Image (cartoon, rainbow, N blue to C red; front, side, top):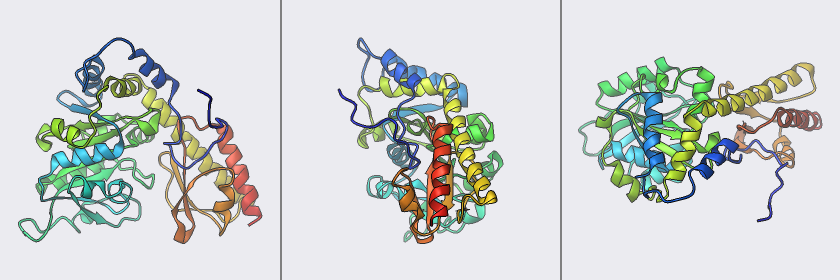
Length: 356
């Protein structure tokens, strides 16, 4: 097949824009050939259970799925009765970026709480964690947090432990959307279990696609008492891969060694390089009118631009508006973002803002 795109074109819209890491692609090829039992009864999916156990401890249960929305919807559905609700930040992916799937597909009410930094606290949770026993109110039975958050911020293990303890004391469970859990682990310089199982998380979604996989995430049950029926719900929600070995092989390639951390550390470092470069330009006057709305703690940079600058920049580098009402944009870096990509983008920002 002829290549249909220009591999030299780069952007900062999403870490989903990147291709497949060569080591992951090699793992898919290595898993090919011959026959393996379908629907997860294969050697690679069995090995994946062991790989996650090495990171998170014995007794975890791993369910590979196709994508992040599927992981979140199916994982949450397994944690809740039909009358259950989830407390989440208003910026949470499950609230604003999944097409209503948690509510429309899983039948879950999202009770969302405004936050300035994308993070929940026990006090914020209590704004919606009430009304148990009231038949007129969806029952708040799960708290869902994201690590790293949709605003690129991070929870410390102590912050997650405080949320877990607060939720558990109220009879609620804790779910973690870990689409960028690798970026969090790399930034915090901590093992994956330090801010998941050891911090009281009950069920998590673990992301591979944004960190070098072709496709594939995993629902990871850290406390089996918190989840029920996943083997049925995964099929019901059209997330059961027939050739599951190829999903599992990708996650093995990431997690069996340190590829997941190498990729995440690089993406984080490129985001820091972008932020530092823009800050330097603001200091020396070569860049004008750019502000930052969030700390850069993972692989995303959130900034505000002068009127009209974003659209002019997008003629060369694609990225998304985050809050168009205040000219806020999001710049994401990936495992394959290069220093040259960052430097070219900073140069374009300088040129465009000086002419604004």
